[in-house]
Image 1 (cartoon, rainbow, N blue to C red):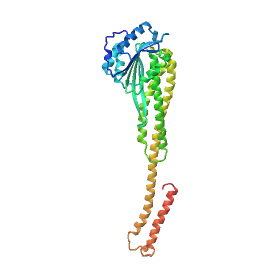
Image 2 (cartoon, rainbow, N blue to C red):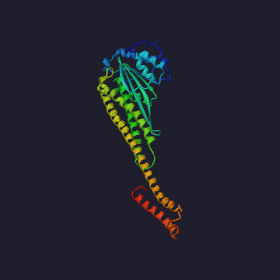
Image 3 (cartoon, helix red, strand yellow):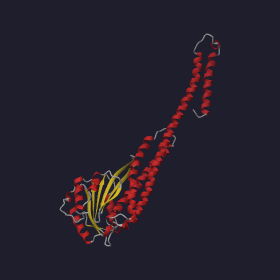
Length: 356
């Protein structure tokens, strides 16, 4: 891996003024100065790293000195400039430029490449807005690349700067802080989805005649997308929690174990949502079928009532010559009485059986 000792002649300062969100140098867990121009930060990091090289990714007693760069949707040219300065692997750079990757954790020499999916639940639209965050971690640098991410990166940085004890672990501390915030956002998204799932369950079993299939299907699609962000992250976090990943300070394993616990609970919830929505969709279809059967029974019952009346009317509407009832004085009222009397009997029978 090329270290920060590469030439500073690379014009990284021109790397998309809108793409570089922040560039800062940290020594012993404390930010040095304010926002540092990229060439200055690189040169300062080189000098600090040369004074205190960290052995095997572990933080030395004096703490890490490293540069932390944040980029928001950089162009390919912007990222290639930074990649050339830090010696990033072309395949990882390609993933960071084009995004749409599964959550993963890979190593390229001494550089760790992490991909995280961010999530934010929009309750009004019942959608989960997904973003993507890539991180390159070396012994003395952190490069973050975000795509459509709602994650407050600057707030994470500010919060982490208030805790120099953790920040002294260097780039691994940044990876922990970001991963922890991503998982916390998963928990918030789960709460929003859980509320909507409970609403759907109440509606499905409310007894009204509304078909909830469209709402259930849309929410199920969102949950499946959410699942594709949460479940693949378990294995990378498990590796970090074991503290066996080269290039990551093993002392941060304790912090990642806490993140792992939250992530596993979230994974169980997401799997549960998927099953609940499957059940709700099946129950909704069963209710629709049941209501259709009830409607068919009612239609059949009324058809039987009308068929009885139609039968009598049809018989006495034939006007055959030898029909003694036609000469009866009470023939007409008797026919009406038979029609309506029989209809009332049928209605009573159908109501007793629950058909009407």
